[in-house]
Picture 1 (cartoon, rainbow, N blue to C red):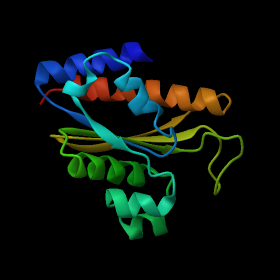
Picture 2 (cartoon, one colour):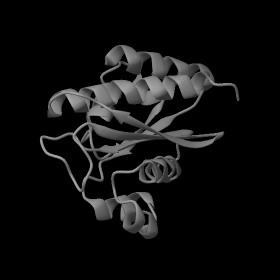
Picture 3 (cartoon, rainbow, N blue to C red):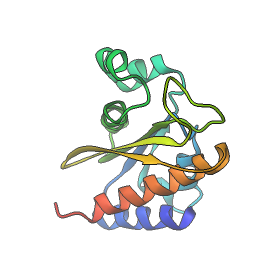
Picture 4 (cartoon, rainbow, N blue to C red):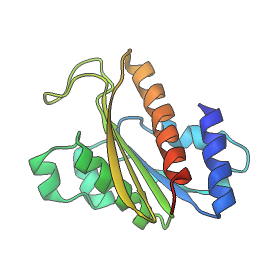
Length: 158
């Protein structure tokens, strides 16, 4: 995982940009992975762990209507979380994770259903993943996939 984090930090350094994280599903694993890389403080602004649903609204600005209509595990929620953390922490990029790590499904969402929101200078996107494995594996793979997606977004034409 730290290989992806090192690659993302190198991309951010080259662009002189920063990133902030919002992690519901991963409970801080994404931020911990990024900060495991020496020199991360140059490009990592910080993170928010809104594990409770209402904190997605109060800390990150996810709309109450979004939470009421699609719930905490949804692409739109991940996108709004990414935008919120980007704006609130003053970063160039925001990345957000929400989903179901298990061991049981949640509100009709299967274990391993994950949404990654990425907000950057050119807009906000979200992607859906279906990851296999136990709780630990889903969390780890989610972080890897999120870092890979951020790396791809950083490589995209501006």
